[in-house]
Length: 189
Image (tube, rainbow, N blue to C red; front, side, top):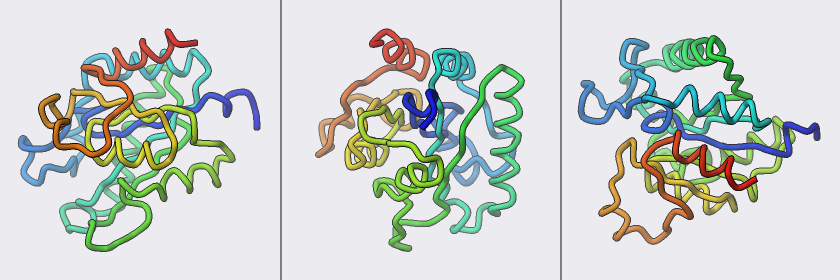
């Protein structure tokens, strides 16, 4: 394991890095690049993580593929354009993992299951447990907790604080957005 692999951070995509598509695009999924809008401060926050030596792994449910709203090729195109835009801002993402299934498919990769974390551990030869997972929803918090990660909920996506009352698994930390979460994490060195 090299030095960068000792500091890994897992991050959800929609609602954390980019504007959550729920309610403002026809399918509530980012199905084309024109609907991918970086949240204010998110590229800069990711750059801070890179500059501090963190390896960034994106873990995202993208069930719109299996629902037929867009193809896996289109998803790959959107992710490729996101990665290119981030590289232009000095941000290197180690890898993007996504689940294209619906809950009814009963796969092992759809959050709140931990299959994507396990795949990242195996492929990247990293250890998830003990690191952070930043997400914007209940499934993110549950998945991160099951994978023994420190869970960070950001309120820039689909969740508000009132919704947490009904959650069985609570996040370890809550922040308004990715920038605040990153500042907190980097301040804990």
